[in-house]
Image (cartoon, rainbow, N blue to C red; front, side, top):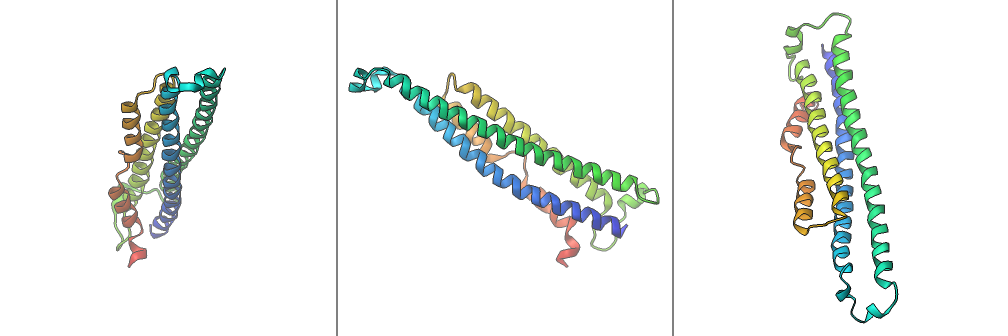
Length: 198
């Protein structure tokens, strides 16, 4: 059983790497979202001809500015979709780690019983804790990925009819990451690596 727990610990090391990558992507996505929001705000101003003053005399200036801003917005939306793909890769990796963990327990030379899954050896976590932990991490990151995908979809749709209030609410959703309970994730990792801290 000790050997199996060590194998699980290596899986959780990989989880930690993925979580660090997630944090980097989160910063990137928030920055992309803010840039898109600023452009959407500008588009509202640029669409009103009374904001151009004497520039109204210049033929095509309004259309040229709008076209330039829409092009920039499209580039940002493409970048956001690529960032979402990277989030999805992390979610897929966490799912694989959980499936590998289940396979590790099922495929051990001696069939693992429920009693063995719940047995604790010293400060090492129980095998059931490792399995449940991997499942928990996959579920919360998957659900956060779905939320991010929804926010990006709504942002794309808002390009037609932006609302500052709605943009603020969407920004808050991205900033908060409501499904990622940092304390629970850290407690889980501390539990798995307890023997290394002793």
